Length: 114
Length: 113
Image (cartoon, rainbow over all chains, first blue to last red; front, side):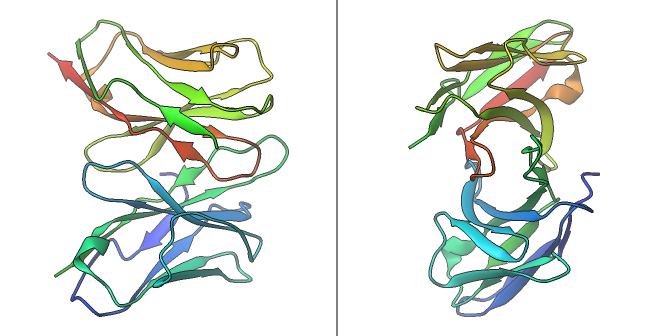
């Protein structure tokens, strides 16, 4: 158990819909990252937050948005969903200071768009 | 841009034998971190081992060790005494400080009984 929690574990929805994925980082971690992993693919970095502020953006579509709240949990919002958005979405957290830069991953949310 | 290359899409090893997974990366930085992550069939991403670039000594975690060649920008993972539970996808990753982490495409390891 990495200490990072994600909900829900599975999500099935239709094209055009909007969903919200939730992530709680490990206690003490200030950074949250979101990744997308399509079937048999590597991890695509979407976005990073540090202590409530956006730190970096990767290959995140305009239909996707995220935020980190004062209690440090984060939400990833996916809208106008397309079939190609079906993937495993990971959240990871990291201390990001004092030489501790490894990321710990949650179990992921499996999104299926039908 | 920093890129991470894993040239072996698939590898196999006999149980109890040793296997080495390759990883190379491209960077102009001198201070960074390297990681190996394991992704078993459950799809959970598990940190296996980390290496700080400023450390010359290769990291070791039980049966897992790395061969870090900074000048060659190479970071291979050696798994000794392979076990059936080692079967997984292995990802090499690069990170410079608190910037985003860059992952390789992964190597699928099969362990034969």
